[in-house]
Image (cartoon, rainbow, N blue to C red; front, side, top):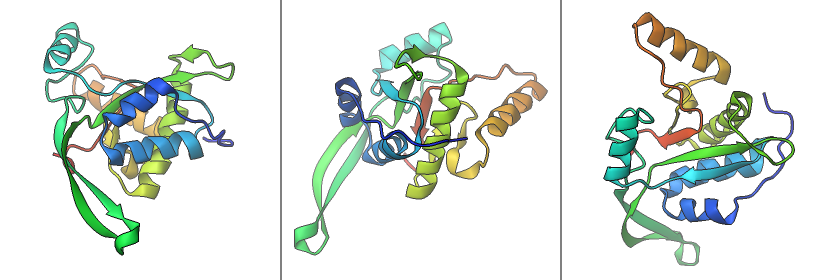
Length: 183
């Protein structure tokens, strides 16, 4: 539950990650940070090479080689307001479709405590809904637009995995664009 947004802004390192990430994702995460969250966040990962991803899978820090962190070719289109909103293709670039975040507590210290990630996930959920952009969160592995309660979504995911006899993979700092919409 959000109390009052604090109007945070991205630091230099996070801005570099945003430059390597799909603009739809950047819209959601930036709105979440600047309009809806009560805790500051920073981006710690956007682009990964296939070799980096393979190492993360090998060590169990990731579950798949089909990671949204591995850049995909994207058409970049800009709307020119001066020309009656005509769209023009700027070109194709390879961009990440995912980011990993670190949270900061009330004193500005880095933290991995779940409650801070839950608060940011709620801000991301609100932003995804308002922008109608499908963003999946690593706390429940669902499109945030389809859930109403962050805590319940995590609890339901954990229960579902345990019922399947599988260990839940909670990656609370991970968010990515829904693969079904962004191939």
